[in-house]
Length: 364
Ligand SMILES: *Cc1c(COP(=O)(O)O)cnc(C)c1O
Image (cartoon, rainbow, N blue to C red; front, side, top):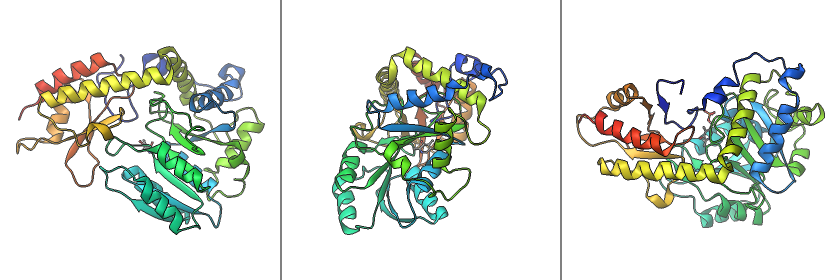
């Protein structure tokens, strides 16, 4: 490890030394040494990770994950379309904000942050408003760590002939599922979450038939997903504007390492092991989780802040950091929490050592 501390955060996260080493060179996008095939290989590998179906295509987009969400929302929903946003956390709320910025007609179906979106309410919303054309939801709401029922909701959306857009930012690559089997038309994720690359671009995996209908919809030049897709398709993986070359090399290495680990199901098992070890150990230390186990994802866990008047997050955080672990502040609106992520280059042994550090850092 080149780092003084391990990031237990939902991305950017701890990456392997070999992923970081892939960036130790400056690359010219037009030179053969960069390997022009690299983008095409990444696009096709992403599709294989997402589904067995050959009806999908992957497009990479510069920026953080939100740029990819914004490019998908802004490119797939045509003028006159209407988006239903299912919202139970900060990232669902961000999709609402994107629709507002882009002037896209939308309605919002809100749930509490610690509550799963309910199928019957989604269905009622679809039935009561036939002008809805698209539905967007977050898979793992990183706000709390809740795992939303993407399969159930997407099935309903499909039944009503609407387009399903899933923000799978913090779950794709860490939780196995087939987007075609689940009826997900558009999936969005980014380089620096469960694939364990570094930040710099996101990607959208969408039905080819849908991509073909998206020409001219975009509300932004640089976030025109259709134009980016066309350029990548027609010019052998070329990005429209400067590509994040170092990040792309690191991502290719991260994909190789995902394969070496045994693919998504092996990674899922490691994350699950990390998460259950963490919760058991934290409970022994007197901490309580925000969510019941049944709602919890293997990605990130929210813990209630200790009720002791002596507890101060910043002090606890700094103490843990000096012991080699960086945790994450809470983001829940109506509960005082902190979060611990277990995605990235993090092993069950790291979690065991983290728990020892927490026992030591617990000063109250
Ligand atoms: C990380 C994340 C995003 C994107 O956030 P950025 O800060 O733009 O990278 C979007 N949705 C979810 C659920 C996330 O976890």
